Image 1: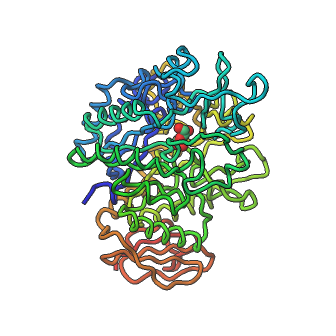
Image 2: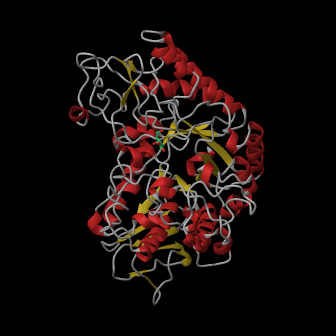
Image 3: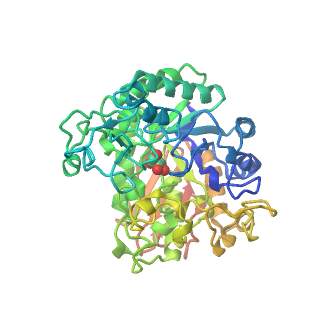
Length: 540
Ligand code: GLC
C-alpha cells in the first residue's frame, strides 16, 4: 500500500523548530538534531514548509531560488544529512513547492522589469496596463489575500498581479518555460530522495484574464471553473504532467494539494492522475458540535473514495489559530472564517479564551481526528498542546497580513513562535545557550510549562497523549472505512475495522463507554463514564 494513504505527517515550520547555530532562526541542522523527538512521537513523515532562500516577505512562501537552501537555514549538504537521518528511522520527507508565484527577487522578476513592456521576460508574470487616463488605476479592484490591492505598479507604468504580497508576483502558467522550470525543480528534489511534495495554493496557477475582467463583487459569484484565477479546470493539466514525472520514480513520489476549493471540487486534485491527495480543511472551520463533525467525516470519506485517494485531516497548521485556542474562544466571537481566522481575535478585547475548555476540547478533537481513516497532518507544537500566542508586540510581528490590514487581522505569527524544548529561559532550548540573537519571534514566559522536556516526563501531558495515540493508531489501524454506531445526539461513536471503537461526547450528559478494553482517553473517565468534551478509544 502507498505509505501516504494512512500516514501521520508532521509539519515543520523550519524557522521556528530548532536553532542549531544560535542566530535565533531555526534551521535544517536543528531538524536533524531533533529526529529523536519525531521518532518518539511516532510520525510517518515530515513536511517542511519552505526553507529556500527568501527575503521573508511571507514567511518563506516568497521564494528566490527553488533549488537551494536559505543560507541562514543551512546548505544543501545539511538538507541531505537531515533527509538521511529521517530516512534512517523510516520517516519520509515532503517539501513545499510554491508554484503560483515566485518572490520579486527570483532571477526572473528583475529580468522582467528590465526587459520592459511586451517582452518575453515580462510575459512569464501577469503584467497589464492600468485603467484611467494615464493608466494610474489598477487593472481591476481585486484584493490580495493579505489585504490591499492585488496589483502593484512598476516604474514604466505597467501593473503586475500578486494574489498575495507585492513581493510575490504571480507566474503565467500558460508559458511552456514556466512549466519546464517547475518540472526541473520537482526532479531536483525527487532525485535528492524527497518522498513527496505539498503544493501551495494549487488551485490558483492557471488563469484566464481575457477582458473584460469581472470586478471584485462579481468574482465572488463565480465558481466551478468559471473564475478567472480560482480552480480553473485547466490547472489539472499541469498536475497530470507532474504526476507523469512523479510516477517515473520508484516508489512514485506523492503530492498533496493545498486547495481551498468547495468539497465537491476536491476530488480533481486528489485523483491518481493528478496530485493524488488534497487537504481537507473542513475540520478547521467546523464548530465543536457532533452534527458538524459527522457531516464533515461522512462527506470527506465519500469524496476520498470517489477520487481513489484517502482523506486528510487537519486541526492546525502554520496559517490558522492553534486549535486549543480556537476551541476556547468565546462563542459570541463566532466561527473562524474560511481560512481559520476568527476575524477580530486578539484585536477585539471582548473576545476571550477559556483555555481549560479549549485544551480539553482540543484533546478530544485530536483523538477523534487521529482515529479517522486516511492521513492526519499534525503541526509542530500541536503535540505540546501549545496555545496561540496572541500578545506579540506590533514591532515584532512579521506576517504581511498584519501590516496590510493595519492590524485589523493579527495574522499568523501567533502559531509560528519558536518551539520550547526545555523549561530554561531565555529561549527554552530553541537556541543554544550561547546564542547571539533571541528567537526571531518572542516566546511568552508560559512556554516553559509546555516544553518537550517537561511534558515527556508527565503522563498526563499533551505530548504523552500524542505519543500514545500515534503508537496505538499504528497498531489498531485496519482498512480505510468506518461504521457509525447508534448513539445519543450529543455523542459520536465510530467503529473501525478490527474492533476499534472511538466515542466522543460533545454534550454535558455522561456517556457509556463501549464494551471492551479502554486503551486511551483524552480526559479521565468519571464514575466509569465518558464525561463532557472527551474522546475514548476502546478495543473490543
Ligand atoms: C499558502 C500558505 C501560506 C502562504 C500562501 C501564499 O496558503 O500556506 O502560508 O502565505 O499560500 O504562498
